[in-house]
Amino acid sequence: MTKIIMDLMNVIKEESPEINGKAVKKEAKRRFINRVDSSFNCIKNTDVVIFLRDKAFDSELHHLTRTYLYTLNEEWLGFSTISLKVLQIGALELAVKKKLIASSKSPKNTTEIPAYLVAQVAKNDSCSMEEFCASDMLTHAIQEIDNARGIVGGKIVILDSVNVDKVIEKYESFGFMKYGELFNGPQWLQPMFLDISKQ
Image (cartoon, rainbow, N blue to C red; front, side, top):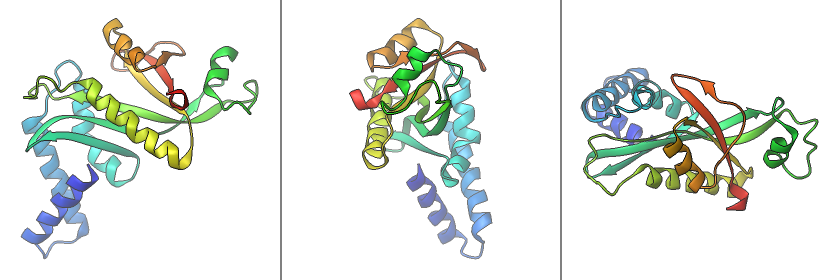
């Protein structure tokens, strides 16, 4: 998405060379929001659309996340978002903590670990490619995380799955495992983790 934002800002600078950096960003964000409003829907999970519309642009520019828009020609098929997270594990059972931490660490004394977060995975309801699915986006997100892991280390990937058996089973097919207790965000969510070093 960084490239999309930069390209959009370059177009705006060419159209209006007299405006400054803040105004360029503001106009780029306005156009991005208009594009989301006009071309991206996900009725089953409106939170992902809210994220894309209201948070993705700024999170990308502030280096908090990386969002990948999957496109076909000019059509937005879907997107995934990844980021870094400090995972609090102090309250977890000892057996679960052992699976999450580096082998040289003591699970009794470890209360937090670094993790990669798959924050969003969403397919556009109006996607014209029937064969394109959430698995394609999740595979790409995990590949990007593995690329980062190869450079900086780390091993745990986390996500919060909607508490729907079919969705949880899909994540389990990628090697994700449940941990911790269900919690209520906009809906009931199940925390899950993947030890990417074992892939």
